[in-house]
Length: 388
Image (cartoon, rainbow, N blue to C red; front, top):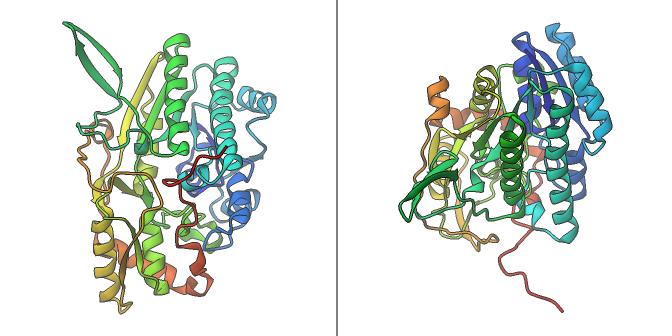
C-alpha cells in the first residue's frame, strides 16, 4: 500500500511509519515539529533526545533497506499538501497531525487558540486534499475515547439508535468532552461525517484510549529509532508517567479519588489497530467508527499495578492522592461497546506485570534524565475565575 502519515514525528506517528515501511508498504511522513516546539516551550521534552524526522528516516533506511519519504511542512500550507497528495496518491492517509495535549489546550487563550486553529485546519485541509487530488484515498483518523466523556449510559461504538415519539433514527453518539483538545476531536468527527455524507469520502475514525509503552519491533533496531516518550503532565499518558515516577522515587500522582476509568492499550496494539483499519478500507460514503482500546482500568487500578511491580523490583513505590487539576468525574459509570476492531482481527496484548516490568527495565538506564518538576500538574482548569 501507499501510506501517507500526517504527524509522522510523534509518539504514534513515527512508530506507525516504521511499522508499515518494515512490511514493505510505501510510506510518506509529514510533520512540522509543532509538538517538539511545544515541548520545549513548556519544559516537557521527551525522556530521550531523538533525532529529527529526516535523520530518523535515513537511519531506518540504513538499517533496514526500507525507505520512508520525509516531508517537513505545516498542513496549513494547503497548496503544498494538495501537490503532495496529487503526486503520492496514497491508498490510505493516517491522520495524527494535531496538538494532542488536553492540559496544554486548557493552559490559556494562546494555547487554546493554537489547539483549535491547528487541529481543525489540519483536518479540513486533509479532507479537501483527498477530495480534490486523491478521491479514492481512505482516511484513517485518530480520534479519542475522550470525545464521549463519562455518560451514565453505555458508550456505543460511535453511533446510537434513537426512538423519539414513535419514530427512529441513527445518530452520532452524543459527545461531551472534558477539555478543548478533546472537543476539537469531536469537531473533527462532525467535519468528517459532513464530508462523508456529502461527497462520499471513505473514513475510519478511531476512538483511541490512552496509550502506554515505548517499544515495538522496529524501535529495537537501533537506539535512535525510539519513539518520543513523554512522562510529563502535559504530554505524558498516565501509565508512562507512573512508570517514570516509580523509577524516580516520586509518589504516583493520583488525581482526586482515582476512580476515573478509561480504556487503555499498548503501543503495539495501536499499530495493530491502525494496520487493520488501513488494510480493510470502508466503502465510499461510509464513516466507520471504532472504539480503540483493549482493557479498562481506573487510575487507582493503574497505580496499584505499577506499585506492585515496582515494589517487586526494589523501587519502593508510594502513591499520593492529590487535588485534581481537571474538571472531570472521579467516580462514574463506564461501560463501552467494542466490536469493530476485534471483528477485523485485533489480538490484544494485555497489561501484564511482565509488560510493566519490561517498561521499567528499559527506562532505568535513563533515570538521570528524569526531571521531577515535569511530573506534578502545572495546568489547572477546574477553578478558572471569570474576569471583567
